[in-house]
Image 1 (tube, rainbow, N blue to C red):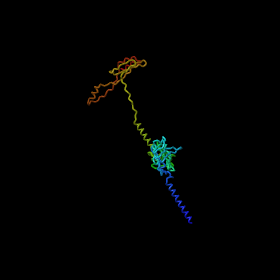
Image 2: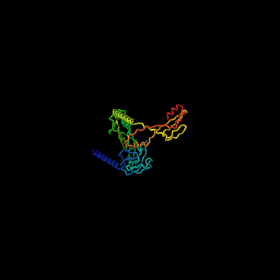
Image 3: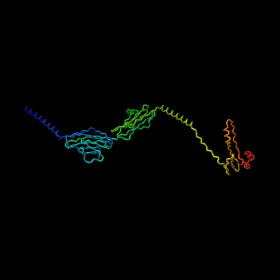
Length: 364
């Protein structure tokens, strides 16, 4: 009985000693690992900006850590490898002057490019530590969005028309998503409001008067969002449209009638022909301004004829002045203008064919 008690006490003591040995062995630092923590596993960056791939590690060793960053591709690409903050080896050309490594293993990338998009693996190892700390961070690099604008075929439509299509357009931006708003309220796929698979196009089928409202679109991507300027869709009733067209037609007809009634063609005045000279076909006869009659000799088939030009005799201006200056005297009727012929050419009538006596009597 006493022997059994002694054996059990020895067993308990051995177990306690073994626990103490194990505890001291783990605390001696011979079997340790690098404990790594990553605050954010997804980092969003914009083209031309910078991204901070932040990590933290804990170790009982005082030796500097060996840090290695790789970018996952079909074949992993080494971004940087360092002992502490001192970079080992030569950086690849696409990463020169763009890399900075901190003591806790954090990596800073400057002047981001679209090719920097991907998943980055990090390894931190210390010589005295048995296990290496490992982790991964996903970096997305996108192009910022320019302000979008809405394209549409017409800003005003007639009710119950076939459809109206809105197109949300923008110049820049990657990995974009779209949202549509009507009067400030979010639109979803409904019976008459149809969104394209990428939600860039909004189609309204059979437009109603209730669709007369303000529409806008919002474009988003991982680095920001932009809202377009609102655009208004005007919807007209069919009866209202007919009234507008008929009123406009009547006004147009009245305007055209008024213009036609007020317009008269301009009459061009024919220039006066100066009585400089009256010429005969065979002889040039100078004009004597003192003569009362200017005859003209013409020849028709060998027959000489006398054509007289009658002019109105001018009254003596002295008579006009005296008559106008007389006061109270009754105005005398003016004598009708007298016409005379030149007696110089009457002898030529005797040579013409016909009745010379009758012709001479006519012109004497």
